Image (cartoon, rainbow, N blue to C red; front, side, top):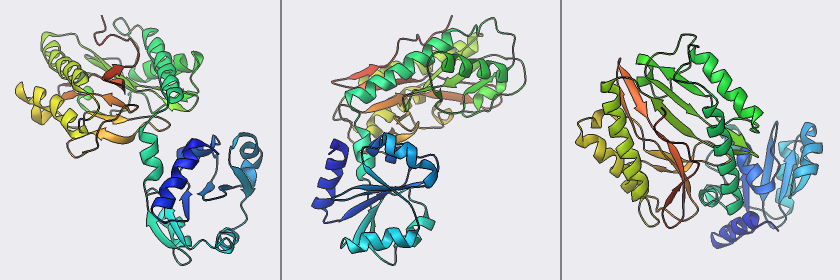
Length: 338
């Protein structure tokens, strides 16, 4: 049986829980190698099974490492579980309430993060896929001529996504951000149909074999923009160097935050320092002031400090790191784009 399934079965046994219900697409994919296109109910128990829609049966039979069965109704599924003597059921925290409501009268329910905890630690194969996704994304970025580009933000975003797909990505890992001028002070700005202003901030990523990448670069032009860029670059570099197994995520966040605060821009750093990624672009743990998760070997987390001067401009620099004895930056794209 798959290692991921075996690990969850051990967790279930330890907590005296008989089964674990998963519906989130990437969790189902993580457990079974089958990615639903409509819906699926993956139930981890002594004999794991995935109930899938008729539309997905062919796909599931082809890809799933877990037995699959065509979904008929909630009642049929619940009765089959009860026939096996299942009385208590763990659910993933992200389970929709409407689904929880279908099960709550027939089983003792508890919310568990078994699969989230497993997904925190990436295998060598997963890191290889994230690395390949990063290579595709960075190669595609270098195909853009940012410094001489007279195009619009939307056109640059379109070109970047096109390059990533042509270079082997299945798609972008999130809506590509190309923003410039005053709008660059908006961390999640939407590309506009306007010519590139200054500075230019691009936040982008590719998906390769299901796994995401994430980078941000900011191209600056003036002395005042360079001053802010230098501060963010210092926070980025020193934070990467500080990361090691055994530290808490909040301690890593503090490294970046303290550097930016020392220069007087603490209130202009308005998001966390980084997030894990994998099958999803945002996973746990995160480098935030509230996350006390202990960093472990195998975690893959972004480092993305930023300073945002409202109505003027913003600077963010982001790389993804894989944790071994230290933090190893994935990819080789320079921070400074000349």
